[in-house]
Amino acid sequence: MTTDPTPTPDHATTTPAGAASTPGTPAAKSMDAIMALCKRRGFIYQASEIYGGINGFWDYGPLGAQLKKNLRDAWWQDMVLRPCWGRSGPNGKPVRCVPVETCIIQHPRVWEASGHVAGFNDPMVDDKQTKQRFRADHLFGLFARPQSSGGQGHFEIPKVTIVASTVGEAVERLVSEKPLRKIFNVRDVGHSSGASGTVQADLGGGMHHWHVEAVRWNQLDEAALQEVPSPFTGKRGSLTSPRQFNLMFKTYTGATATEDDKVYMRPETAQGIFVQFKNVIDTTRVKVPFGIANTGKSFRNEVTPRNFTFRSREFEQAELEFFCHPDESVDWYRFWRDFRMEWWKSVGLAGDNLVLREHDKDELSHYSQGTSDVEYRFPFTAPGFGELEGIAHRGNFDLTQHQRHSGAKLEYNDTERGEPLPNGQRRGERYLPHCIEPAAGLDRGVLALLCEAYTVDPSRASPEFLKLHPRLAPIKAAVFPLVAKDGMPEIAEKLHADLCERFWRAGAIELDEKQSIGKRYARMDEAGCPFCFTIDGDTLKDQSVTIRERDTGEQHRIAIDAVSGFLTDKLGG
Image (cartoon, rainbow, N blue to C red; front, side, top):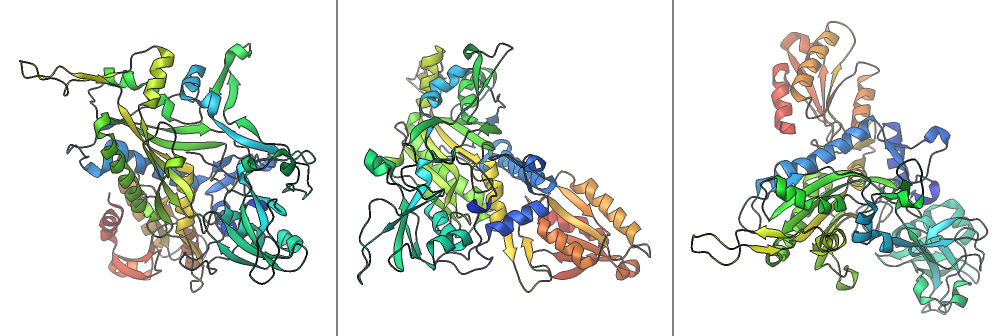
């Protein structure tokens, strides 16, 4: 999994919240509005913001840090502590997983064995005039296509280019960003799909439909490459030919900092699992099939980090390597593929914005027998989708590579298989287990949850709110005294203390007596808090409180001593 960011205007959409979208797709949401809410309510900040920021790095504020922890904890609970909610796997037995925590910096030969040193590259292109850099596979062009009513002919070389992650983003930028609309006289979107789109524009010769698709560098010869216009200046002949750029961050260990001391910051957490496979087998009572889970920071020196936290240079992963017998691997692949899709639905991503996409054969790695992506329709990928999690059948490629490069024997001795012996036991079968890898990006997960939860209801006094799943909401409940007098603050403080004592493991319980009750409700709505409890004049008479529910705005009363039970039922704890 990769991840990534930058809230610069040229990487964000500006579609008004609730605006109409392509038929058959949900209404578009404004990425600008979501990013503004994230900053305003303390979910996500630009890293080093007071120094102008640093591209590709993001910090989480108080609410964002708790939301991300809640997502991480949910993954940990459902993948390690109670895997798959206690279900049995394809073998009819409960799923077993154990955790590890491995170092960010590993021996450099780990990355030689895994193939990252030689093959973990992106094609990079530079603008020779501006020195700006982008990924070759992120360049989209506007191509003229024949029209039924005397339109322009077909051009193999694009007339205009734009840097974007998807065709949806490229089309969206053309029709939403005022500078681009003015330069190209873009008026409207004709059609947009996962691979191509059209816009109406006047690039000279009148208004025509222009086809938008990726510029395929490997299909252009050197002469044609010189004709591709720069996405930054529009000039031809100013772009370099693509060259491979290794994405791993290099650093040095020790005091001398020579090439002999060179190491890498990990680009994924998975390899730490593979190199500790034998130790886990030798020091625990786990037996194949079982999984090893690892979460933590990874680092990729992305050429063009973009789209807020979607593609970052520093990001957090939650990965499981599930080891099984080769004969059972396809069944386990299907099992994990289906469960991971179901899991994302369970935490609030159910709906048309979430899909499970099986990779075509030409997309698979040479060692893979199958890969599926859980994909989410982000505002900047719409109407297409962006990867949220990959579930890959990796075969025994990784263990084979590490066994070959390290010289350590990593074969598993399966004493429940092999030829029966006279004593009733089995001779055992030695093999390198196959591996199924569900690999999720926690930063992308948080971003998807925020995008899905972001809701605009013009009929409400405060129209923006976050419909976060109660399990993940950073603030679980809030307690408000209606006014700061008549004993209401004291009752609110006692209820708040009782709830904090009871629910501190679930998340924060807020106490707020500042400003009007409407403004306090609005703050909690934007924070994604699902329930607010208000102490008012009636509380002093009958010991009841008002419950206000975030999603509907509805209010009803319950006894103050029933609040804890109400939250227990709603939060499941």
